[in-house]
Amino acid sequence: MIGPTRILIVDDEPDTVGLIEITLKPAGYLLDRAFSGSEALRKLKDQAYDLILMDVMMPEITGFDVVRLLHEQAKTIPPIIFLTAKSTSEDLEMGKTLGAAAYIVKPATRGQLLDAIKATLNKASDA
Image (cartoon, rainbow, N blue to C red; front, side, top):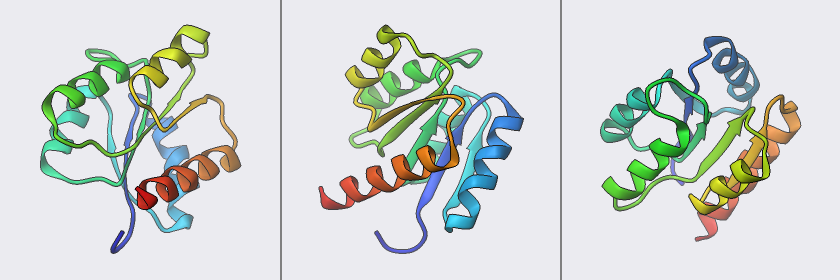
């Protein structure tokens, strides 16, 4: 990976996006945000990202549906970490089925988030 790591944060809650940015900016990540699934899809057409942090419960189109559409429309997609309050075993299984690199249940600690991102990026660079 050359240059800073680009991460797209997808969540319909501005406060949540702000907290994630506060956590990730000091680590040197280049961050972009989308406040809906449809906005995320638009941004992903125009910009390459190294990682996507995706909420599941959003209006219009869910995070799960965004990932389904990405699999249908794109040749390759960046690793995806679901960061969501949805915590049932069915939700976790759906994340796994969709190929999520990690599934983190909110509220997550700073360490959980940073560790998952680091592990996911390391795995992606080894591939």
